[in-house]
Length: 583
Image 1 (tube, rainbow, N blue to C red):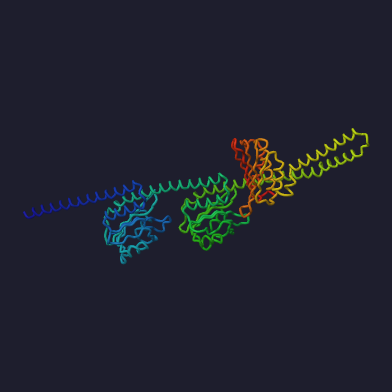
Image 2 (tube, helix red, strand yellow):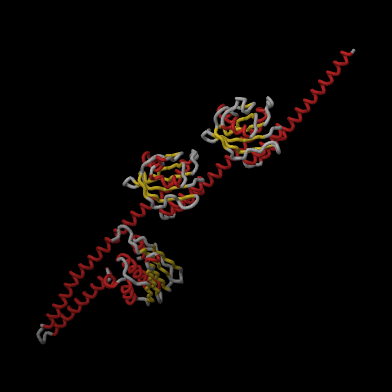
């Protein structure tokens, strides 16, 4: 009987225990699912990875009842790991600060997960256990950690990091701990992948915006120094680096810095700095290979070229060549203070900017060649005009003067009573004198003598006196200018006055000439405005078209502002420094 009662009691106790275990397992399952739902909600709301990390470590720590949980990320080179999220139970242990970093190696969970790509566990980090070694194990012992388990986090097929449980007791984690943690690591991976996709999208948009800004400068033919400054600054902000440089290779084997930017303070290599190639640096490597190059750790062998930036703290750099019309022109470099190296896509992202730099340089060189060609044509025309003037003065004009004098002498020798002959000689002498006057006027139109002898101001006063329309002339800062500048300004006023007389039906013309001193930029500004009918068209075949070519050949600018019934203004701006190709 007693045996029957004892058996019944044991069966009842076993049933109670089984039911209690089942209830506990159910509560654990429900708690786990609730924790997963809360983390999944964060991921679905596109929370930042940092928010997801904080949520995961807190949920996992409370779910498993451990003292501490961590999310660690492996560095790209696989040599170290960094704490990205940490949680610790209140009053038990202080959490490892986010950003804590240690080198991998030895026998510990962090190193084991990195090497195998699978879950790992360490049962005892104690000094005498002999089971765990390495920097991670030493760090665990200093913080009283005795055991841990880690599960890999894989993002887009690549090992990103690991999630680990940490305990200050010698304990065996549940056998299914790794499997249960896998659900959380999957959510972490989803959050990281989503954040990376959003970041890549933002980076792409930012890159395209930066390229558009530089392309706009190139399209409006901005000066090269403007393009260089914009490129170095845009690249610096876009890539998040500390320094950017744009160097040009010189024919003598040296390098000239044409663009420079620094995140803080002035660039370590000012624009205009000149260096010799040599040493282990990206500028020399690009020159030697004609291909992109990178140096992940600058050292004593970097050469004099990189001494300034190394002294300023640069430890790694990437350089990409700039080719102009098939020849190696220079390179763009991006440098950082961190020695780990720049992202793998840095070269590709720099390439778009090098193409814009090449376009700007090619455009500038083409424009310079065009300007020089036009300048040579203008100079040749002026030379021909002076030659014609000399030929007229020394040849035909002198012959006509001599002929007129001979006719007067013949007239004086006519005997009395030959009135008809006397009258004929007198008429011929007058015609010869008139021909001389016409020839002199023609010569003045080709190149006014007063312009060569007295300068721009006297020549303009003479021109205003002879104009068919009343002219109000104001010359400010009058002084002698380069011959080509004076000729261009004279013909600008002459053409504008001729147009006002022929086409504008103007009653008065205002001419203002302002010669700025060198301290204020050294430029000539000419403004000719009439009160005529307006409607002038620069492209309509007027004499201003040729004048525009002359002005632009001298690196100047001619503009026409006109409105029907409100007159016309012709403005000319000329730099006083002569461009190449103009004598």
